[in-house]
Image 1 (tube, rainbow, N blue to C red):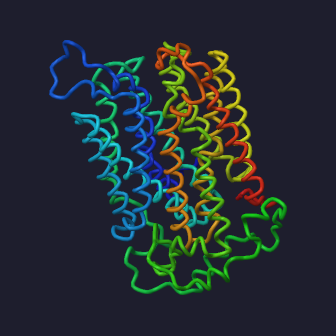
Image 2 (cartoon, helix red, strand yellow; image 1 turned 180 degrees about the vertical axis):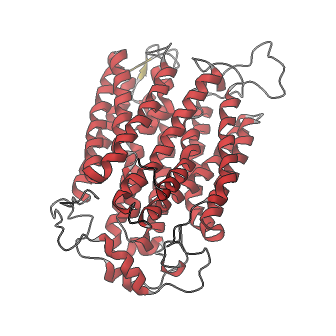
Image 3 (cartoon, rainbow, N blue to C red; image 1 turned 45 degrees about the vertical axis):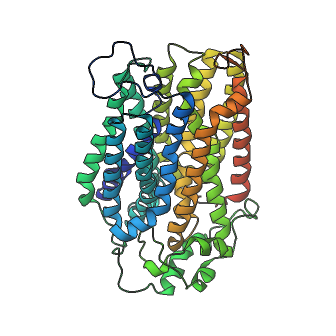
Length: 495
């Protein structure tokens, strides 16, 4: 099994640190009615208000502010790891998560809830920058795990989707089938505090690969080490590359000489990778280096389009979108979505090193685009079963390719000294795109549709599925980008 060896067990433990990230993404989805309720005339005794007066715009803001915190966390992650090391960075995410959960669970006003969401977003932003490269480092530290680097890296996405599923299930348990039990949303929020406490307690047991440097190395990196770390960008001499697939973005010559020339490097480590602090490539050099610019732009673009594909629009707002069509089952459909997300991540774990990253991305984008168009049609035509099938299939298509693979590309398209800068750049783009989707999806849906009753803007809407045609176009663009930009290495499933 994947987690049977000692190194793989460490990787599985670290992947679980992404569970709170997934949980916070979805924790306000199921109990949305409990959050936006009106206080009852005779509320039960409680020192905290049952309802926080969350209107639809406020709900969208509280949901989206999590991604603002994630962006801040991504930007400061390199500073956190430089100051505290990997173990300290993991402990930081636990403390921040616990503080944010307490603020949300005890919130007397909606803006305190939003502040707590911002703090847990910072925690998730640090974790999402720290965990994937660290899993890659674990894989490279063992000859047994190196051929399964894709499987190890995909555990990151598995931790996120298990967190998403857990949030939906606990929402159903505490707030009822319709998610409308007043005040019980606080219990849903509190659950992630338990995970944060466990993360803090286990932080000192973090496995440190033998090639990781202390957080304050005494000697600068030798330029030869940087050149040696850069050679994995190009395929071996006996491994041909499909020249047609990527003339625009991935330079064919080996970039080691150019990386070797960039010796004026500044402190910017996300994770120590064995080349020293002075050996890390900062963002400005990443974008100015002609050998690294193409892979960096490709990776950042894929990370942006991952969010603009519409997956988090479905995750964040599956309940509001489906409630008009399935008034008694929308919440259970939300649970089904996250369950499919978790189940379909398992095939990706075992296919990523066999089929290859490029093929999984292309299949995922094509499947998502088709299901997005089908969902648009079904919502407009009010076909209930087709709508539910299309949404669940859309998430399944995401889980098998576009979910886990972009995080693998961060540590595989550039040499190790450039991974921290690319991780910060691409994940910052990911959070920014995530924020705009969370903030603008419902307004865009409303702009492309019209209320059935013009006198009541809150009534059912005509043409509300049109917004998913936009996501179909995004998926088509993503497929073209991957087809032209990501090389297909024959004889290897690595890319």
